Length: 236
Ligand SMILES: C[S@@+](CC[C@H](N)C(=O)[O-])C[C@H]1O[C@@H](n2cnc3c(N)ncnc32)[C@H](O)[C@@H]1O
Image (tube, rainbow, N blue to C red; front, side, top):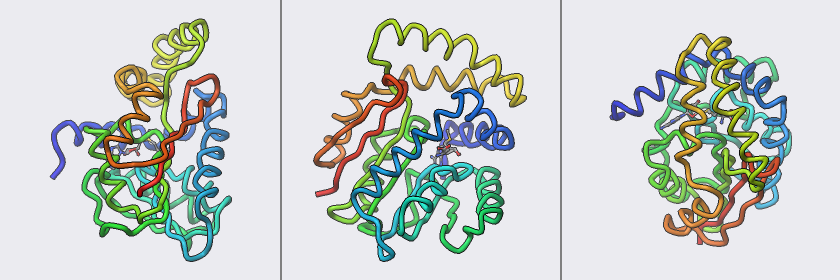
């Protein structure tokens, strides 16, 4: 049963779904594509063969799982709790003839319908921040991972240079919400984005959270001066 806050988040993503890809690529000047490529290469470095099973959580319209299919040999399950996001994802899979390689599941990332120790790798791109409890999300990912499996998190983070941080915050809080509101027809979704990032742990704090959720060998990599970061870790 979803909480009222989770239902609100689902409603927000469902209403921006038709414009989600366009705004992602426009507002990031297409840089988001290279971030996803990098995240998948971190995943593929751990395990990638036809017997492997990968899970992409909060998959949205499917850009990360399509990149997983491009770079890896694994079988892929992708899940999200927004039906409109999954419908768009499925249309994309059909256009790319990928329906047989990627299985879509409608599910809440905090209560996954999978047994423990199922997946060789689990990813989540720009999803962890939206969960009501990111640490519960990491704990649930830990549960469904096989021992020795890898979790990969791609998320907005904290720019490392003070000057760049100020410049980016100005864009993030002043320009992005206006363009987002105009093109998505949703007043709050693109104001929620910088707000939620500002409340999310920075690189070092997030790395610590992985440790408290039972993960080992936590590492991270800054992307585009720390605007985003990839964290990865292993289940003992
Ligand atoms: C910012 S989008 C990211 C989509 C995709 N991973 C990407 O890289 O573009 C966040 C996604 O997380 C999903 N989401 C948020 N909270 C969730 C939850 N508790 N369970 C499942 N999906 C959730 C939303 O429906 C949305 O599709």
